[in-house]
Amino acid sequence: MEKLSIQEEEVMIYIWELENCIVKDIVAKYQKPAPPYTTVASIVKNLERKGYVKPERIGNLYRYSPAIKQSEYKRTFVGNVVQNYFENSYKEMVSFFAKDQKISAKDLKEIIEMIEERKEQ
Image (cartoon, rainbow, N blue to C red; front, side, top):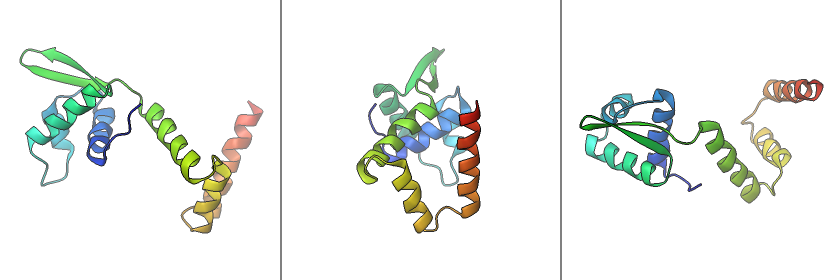
């Protein structure tokens, strides 16, 4: 799976939200001023070329839908971040955010509860 640029990720997030959409629908999701239609159309074409979206021709338009689930994308690239920056340790990653005060004790407790609930299943 090829890593997406920031612009491609933004468009892909809109496509995941919309599920089935035309370029005009994606442009409408942007805050004003939105990028030009042609720019968004080019980004969507790149996503199609990379295998992230599937086109469906409807008359003279194309409707796009995700070819890859958002959870699959997250899993792949968060895993890469953990591997490359945290010695392949999720514990190191969580510790980093705890030390940097990006995650609270309350959040950590909730994470522990989720882990313990999964163990019981």
